[in-house]
Image 1 (cartoon, protein in one colour):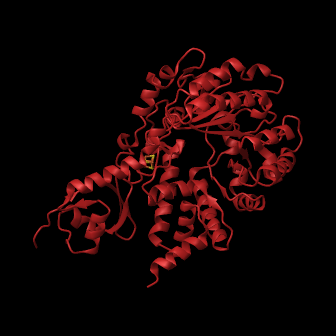
Image 2: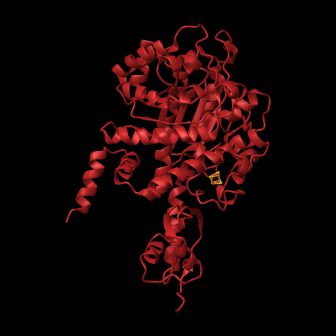
Image 3: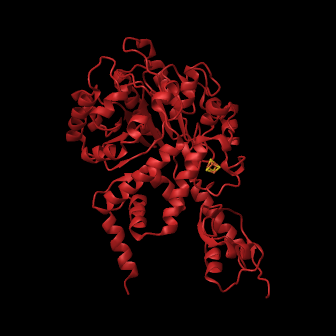
Length: 492
Ligand code: SF4
């Protein structure tokens, strides 16, 4: 038989059960092929008329007469995937106070007591922080108020808002504000301000009252859930349902009760959840025995709950899982999904950055926590002593970028999931004292591998109901619309 003339473009692959291969190219396009076709492809024996040949060519795994065009297509898709880099330093988290009225068992921020007002950000630090933020070249600036409990330093939130808005009259960026709050200190004046200035609210919800109050404890001993619940209703009456989103922290306690947790989210009118495994930082690290679980236990529950969510959507209750949605966007579309924790190079410092109450700047909240325990390896600078170039162009940020490109990291460079995954250099450092990390012993790697294995299994099974739900999450459109579009496309 005559050998075919074609060039093979770069790709990674994984052997699946039943003599099947998953192949993924540099721009994230994927294909399932048989082992026989895979071998034929590599031996230049793949028949030019076969359906596999056309699919491989269409998805830029091989090129015959048009190598330059195929390479340019892959390069264009890759540029589009990496376009989050154009928004260099767009997310700015400001810790306006380290004080908190809660003392949660897993708190990353290891909060300070209410009377310790010396851990509040003052106006001198706040003003310099905003000046630094406006030195960023990003067309989008998102300022997120964090704590502790940020509402404990409400006056400085207002000052930062007004000063940032004033500077933006000249800078003309797309300026957004978010307050991350447990909602329990919300006053009418705050609600008025939040409504008037269209400030988004991010809150925390671990489940129904018993679950929420178990690890999210108030310093004064009252039920945080009851106040959270009534303030959420009050807030929503004024700013509408979309103005507040919630973050779920999964501990050993609610891991086996996730269905109950999801039902509660639905009952409270949320339309999605982010299933986050507990990270080994702050108090959570000390309390791992009581709070933690294995990656296998997490992924097993993740699979169950994904199935439950798919069923909910099919029953007419639209509700998304955001981590899955993010991965599906990367799998099915060429668009950029700038999620700081899952980027290459890592989003730490170049996409998001955090300013501590005292003016110290860190790439992530986890790096700030590390500093709190005495290790200031990731301190990028200080708003009162360093300018933008020194903070963002220093050797630390260069090292973070250089050593967090997934395409060249040991273990990741040949991984089939490279195009969809990301790098967490701070976590690598916490676990191995080296920001490059060690993939074979990394829980981050194990979790992403197991989740992506499961998603690709579902994609390979190609159940139309499941795929429709996935597309409704990716496009944020109602399931009926997705089905109607598909029906219209398939109609004669
Ligand atoms: S972290 Fe693990 S799953 Fe992710 S790309 Fe690297 S090797 Fe693959």
